[in-house]
Length: 155
Image 1 (cartoon, rainbow, N blue to C red):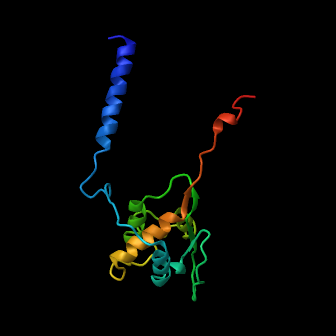
Image 2 (cartoon, rainbow, N blue to C red):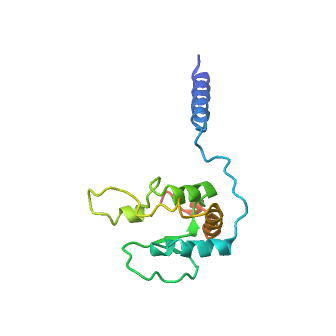
Image 3 (cartoon, rainbow, N blue to C red):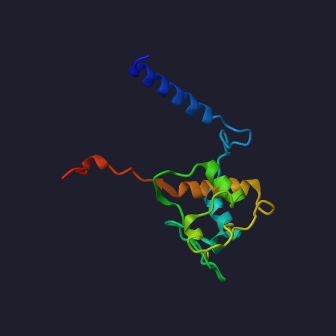
């Protein structure tokens, strides 16, 4: 076998492993399709459910939280990868799944990394969740990737 054939076989094997790794588990969120939500109702749910205690939303006027808060995280704005509906649903109903790096950076060393977000699954209706996800999703804007070709890599 020559080196060119060996390289082709290695590439085919790598592709096969990559496709095998893409198999979805039975609990995958792939294929999750929410009904149409209402942005205005989602904003109202954001306030009603107390999300304003720890979150602001980029370029959205929300009432100030009347109480003490120790952490504030801004949602929305320009991002390289827009959060999917599945990402947002997971963040709302399972906040410990991915914990914000901004929050983690404020924890004392050695603290347990648990989300301070309360479990809303018993008090939030499905309609509120759909509207909330629609509202939040509308606030993310995909920013263009930088064009690195314009930089001189060598002097």
